[in-house]
Image 1 (cartoon, rainbow, N blue to C red):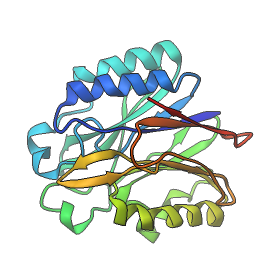
Image 2 (cartoon, one colour):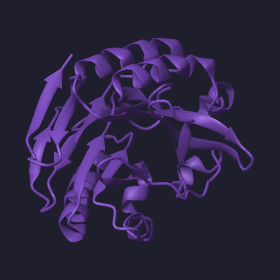
Image 3 (cartoon, rainbow, N blue to C red):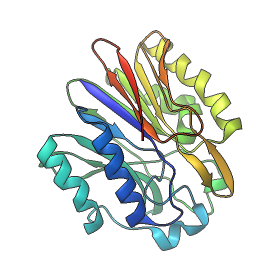
Length: 239
């Protein structure tokens, strides 16, 4: 199986413009079976704007992803604030070929997020040719989340984040540790550019199941990492 993580510079609050950029990155990831974008990738990580930007899983603007998914048989995971019973969640919309859309929503919120978002419990992992589990940003540092993520024998772990330099310096060794501890292939999708008045630090990455770094983007470029999960060959492609 081939998996891609995308590194994008979001246009603040501009879903239509961000969709266009996502489509460019999906085209760049030609040949992949799955592509995962950073946290809240379609709006940018902007908690104070989330109430006005929040939508639902059936938003017609997401039809562009469904069309590509159906045609190319690719699974696409994009970030959006989603209206749910508990409130607005930080969510990943999972678009699969000829299937209803699914949601993975952030359960463990950072204290700074609690005024803007609601926690949402998940019971979802994704099975393609391997079992895949997800984390959204702060969740990767929560031991209870990591334990739960591997409870069903998942062997691929993908973190979708919005991390600054300080945050990414902590996240990179933590993810390498998750890879080696749980014998899992681990990938990270981070943004670049200004989000929530801070600078996202990029460094989207991939590790093998021994925690060895296979590929990494820098802090400046938009692009993707394409990883073959069988051979562990990884390729960086930049826009």
